[in-house]
Length: 96
Ligand SMILES: N[C@@H](CCC(=O)N[C@@H](CS)C(=O)NCC(=O)O)C(=O)O
Image (cartoon, rainbow, N blue to C red; front, side, top):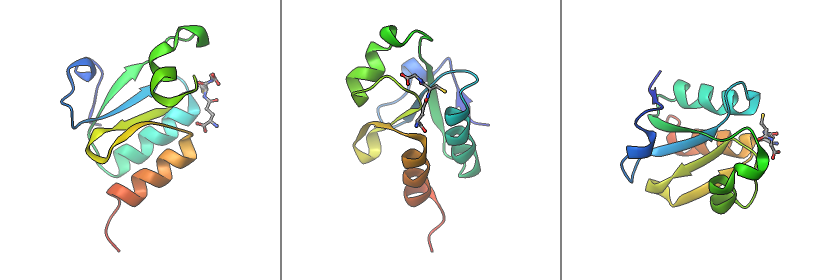
């Protein structure tokens, strides 16, 4: 497991960041994929109240999590767990 909550706010510009909520099954699915692919990432826990998720809304245009940021590939705020998992597998999965 390579998630580091404390370091998320200091994450280098190139590090992936996952906006998430504890207990969120959609977030878990993305985290499982990150772990399976051995991709390091920082974690940002969002407020449980939707109207307080201004940071997530600003980067993704909506308030649901998970949301992925991957600066190395110009991904600024990808929402939808299925889309994120497909992106991670295509980008960080084993070459065919
Ligand atoms: N279809 C979305 C569902 C995500 C979702 O419903 N996330 C919940 C947390 S488990 C959430 O953030 N809900 C708040 C909202 O929809 O604004 C996905 O697969 O990513």
